[in-house]
Amino acid sequence: WWGNKPKLDKIVYKQMADTAFQNGEIDAVEAYTKDDIKAIRSVKDAQLRIGYSTKTRVLEYNGKSKPLDDLQVRKAITQAFDVNTYNNVQFQGLNWKAEQPGSELLLPFQKGYENNLPAEAKYNVDNAKKTLEADGYKMGKDGYYAKGGKTLEISFTFFGDDATQQALANAYQAMMKKAGIKVKVVNVAESKFSDTVSSGNYQVLPMAWQAASAMTFVVSAPQLYTSDGPSNFTYVGSKKIDELVKKAGSLSDYDEQTKAVNAAEKEAFKLYGTIPVSNPASYLGAKKGLANYGPSGFAGNLPQDIGWQK
Image (cartoon, rainbow, N blue to C red; front, side, top):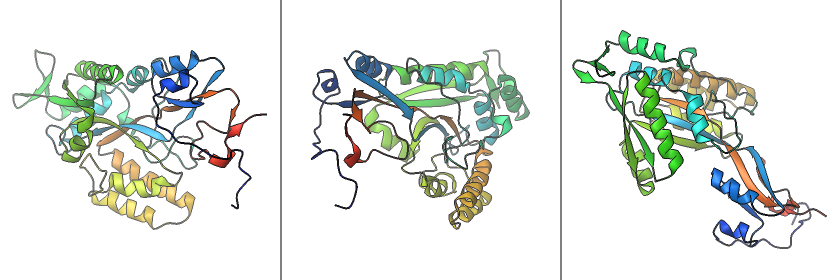
């Protein structure tokens, strides 16, 4: 062993229910909901440790499905998306102020991060209506836009029976209605997530990306934004974006890499296939005195450094 002298003799892994923390059987537990946090705070001598996660929540628009095969419709639903209201619902009770990030490749605390969203992507219901009207849509008596006798309708898919996810779907439906866009909410079992994504059986899909390391953006760019990228669930792209991404992959200098991927992402966002929504927090409940364990971004928690404060 060539590392630092470990503070523990051994580490035991055991699958247990989260209630084990409340029962004093384990020393730390991750939290994801306001109920999880409430449970942690009910434990004597427990601490709630909060930090940035390396996750980015996004909305994916299926660009091969009608009417989202129309760039102007994708642009309009982006302009009609009230991201602040959406995030307030997402993080209610979690004591986390989530600002909309401008990238799905680099996190706001990373060197080289830029806001790559187009200026026209900002929330503005009037602009959303103008975009649709310039695209040939007309407002109907029912309060929804239509073209060629067909009402503008899209679907919003969410998974499972979590109350927050249902509330997010309802909020999205309500904000689109303000812009004259009809939304059908589709609820699918959690077990069907992979099948739904891989088959493209969705239109507006909330999901998230997880960055494994500070350099993940180098491999994420071609996966997310190239025309045939394996994680391009928007199904939109261009030769220009492919070339910019390829250029980024050929560079070895960090500053040049971030400059190149930012340029590629700016072009990708102009296609309105996907938008970043938030960077959630990472929460951990821990017994008082547990050292070197908790939210740590890309640094991770080295097992040999975990121990108890003297």
